[in-house]
Every structure is written in structure tokens, then in C-alpha cells.
Image (cartoon, rainbow, N blue to C red; front, side, top):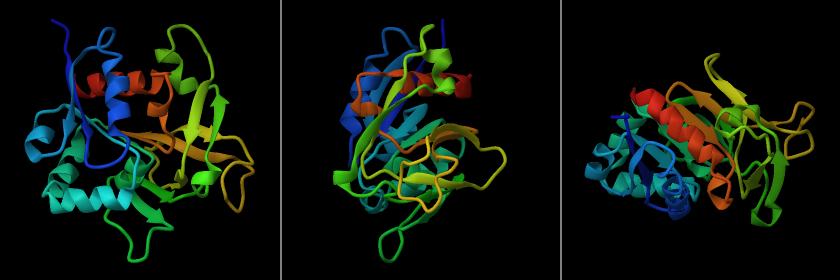
Length: 221
């Protein structure tokens, strides 16, 4: 029997429902046993892989701490396949700048520096279509550009470990950076971790979710 994975989506705050819908859309073609909402330690212990959704990173961390889940999350993400999108990327990172006054708690596992709200306020949200070589293996033989959605998004301002693999760079001219000559890094992979600053769950294109499912299957093999 082919191996399957049970995938959890952290459901404390943010766009978790959209991720669940996207993952469930793959259950007919990928080896997913179940997709569940993760709110408790017991939920987290039952899954093989986890998505930390976009939302408000400070709020997600605060709710996780108050519910007694933060320490378990920190242990989980050390070894288990985990994908952080937007706020989830911030939480996974080892360093974050432009945080709220007093800073915020991080899971401190992904060796990158993330610039919070890099792309401005809600009114500065935008989409851009880009061809992404990292998605070729999950594109069913096509190379249709992916629609990247950025909403109050962070950006990865530096890679702090040579093992971190850059996956997607926005072309120059996007993001409120001092220097955009080389573009802006918005997706990375590091061991069992995937970090993206955009919102793939807000599109009908499930290739990034398929990418993570296959990454999770590889990690659990």
C-alpha cells in the first residue's frame, strides 16, 4: 500500500480554511489520508505535516502560547514537514524586522531574516504571474505561470545558512526595499521547512500545495 500523510493546518487565526480546501482538492490525486484543523496538542500529535497559514503572526503566536501549544509547535517544526505562508513564514524564521513594538515570539527554526509588511499596507496588495522552475515537477507537463498573491506580505531579506534553497524571486521593482536590483526573495526551502510570503491558497491553482504534499511524503518516507 502506498504511503499516505495526514496534513494539519494550524487553525488559530488566519486563512486556514482556504488551505484546507486547497489540500482537500488534491486528495484524489495525491497520497493524503486526511486534512484536519490543528488547535490542540492532540491535533498536532496526530499529523505528519503542518501548514501555518497567513494571518497576523503576532496573534497566532499569542494564541498558541495562551493555549499551551507553542512549545509543541516548536518541537514539531524541528523535524516534521512544515510550510509557513505569509504570517507563517514570519513565525518560522529565526529573525524578523519591522515587528510590532516589543517584538514577537518566533519558532526560530528557519535561518532567514524576514522583513514584516515588506510590501506595504492592505491597499498595496497585488498579484503577479511568474513562471517558477521549482513547480515544474508538479505542473503536469505544463509551465503555466503561477498567480502570486501578496497581501501585507513579508519578504526574505537575507539567507542566513548556506543550506537554505531560494525558490522564487520577484523581479526588480516590487516591494518597499532600498535596493531591488536583484529582485525580492519570497520563497525558500530548508530541510523539512518551506517558507513562502505569498498566498497560494487564495488562487484556484493548487501547485504549491501539491509541491508541499510531495515534500511531506518525501520527508516521511
